[in-house]
Image (cartoon, rainbow, N blue to C red; front, side, top):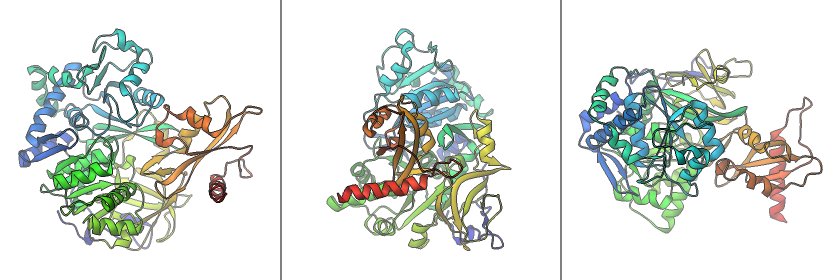
Length: 570
């Protein structure tokens, strides 16, 4: 479907209030129904390619595998509405689990592959996961080792008979390994468990699934507490996936290369579901992003579309400088996570042949995309703005009193429409604070121009964006306060050429207690994700405060930059 500029509306009456077009119409379908439509139309086309493991499946072959996995989940006792955690990098089993859980109406719970023990325990407990499906390891993370540390009962329990004191809801641990050891079921065995009865039950379950059912929980941190589980429905993510790939003109002839993580909406919604909605082929270069593997995959598989955050594209351009490849098949793609420098965009257009690359903006709580550029928008608009509003959405920019500001003025972005989550799982208070009369308060500061282009100019609550990862200072502060020698901590971001921002912390130690930055960094290692660990830690005697006693993070940020610059000179 080719869209043009008339498909995106301008703001209303000079105010920062814009409503998206009503075309294409919304589809009231579930994920299994979406997949079945594609299966009927494109069953013999390539669906999945995993370059690292040389796994290739057509949509018809993938359909058979989905039913086998779904039947296995039924045999385990997983039912509609049960939560199933997935803790893994980009692997075939991840995508298979995504569709198998949707097939039976179980709710997939995305767990960041970088999570460590404390974060894993919190996520599984918060939403009451009944099963956890995990890779054996990823990079330096020994998942099986961490799981056994968390659940020592596995050593003395048979498969399917887990009763963990810390996690009373968790019954099954499945690992993507042929022999994971006592108490853990292998993923291969799971897919063989379903018999005739379970396969017959799959068809009966179809009639019980509704588009408005919750189907996915994604953890997103908050500035005032621990991570919250944004709960999304079939309707939310199916339609957002459609509209995202509409805007890059994706078709069944395309081959979409996905090096971004599946645990995030970028990979599983904009990527996998978006490609499935068009019958396109999905190519995964490896378990995580690597510029060499990604470019090799594009060249070998003749990729036509590519996703990534700006730092990924910078790394790929650097690799191209030393090892050129034929990327002539590329046409389009998506760059999201942060704004792209114009010189990088120009090189992506020319050196990578991605003349139709688009920019996206959104948040997990809105499924995720609200704004996106068109393939023929001018380069400056694709670098300085996040494009124009998506179909069937409404956005306003408001001041602190909640009043809509005039065009060109800064304020908080609020989004309303089909894409807004049902809420934060098990947290009515946090939901009520974020959603008011259907409006999702994004916490981002934005400006709308007279043509409806949106520019993100800041963040209401000091969120840090490091290499495309959203990092919320409060979560890190609460963890660092567990150190027995720490009495106060403030976390903030400073500019960084490579990652966009780096995490910094200012800490006040208990009187008379010796403490240094490296000690605190070591305290964080293995307990919180590596990208959340502050790169710079300063132990200080006081923090800059307002007259009302609130910490002034902008003052800390300015002073930290000055300190680091002075250190470079000396």
